[in-house]
Image (cartoon, rainbow, N blue to C red; front, side, top):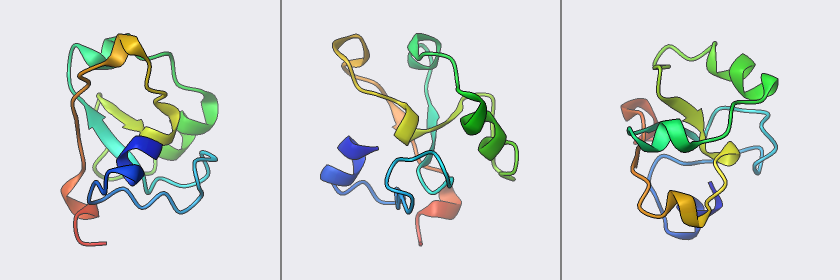
Length: 84
């Protein structure tokens, strides 16, 4: 999420500042990157279940911590977030 904010990625609002309290940083993580991410915490799973556009590869970008193992990660922002 911080990388997206630092680089002006449209659609990442991050209203809660990365505290995993909202879903304004929702994204879709492409394979094989999704499988390289750590498991979701309960709070993230709970927030995602309320999204109409949640998919099997949905994550909250505030819970995706960029490491060398994720160099090159590809994510997409849900269309509903483009015009916020």
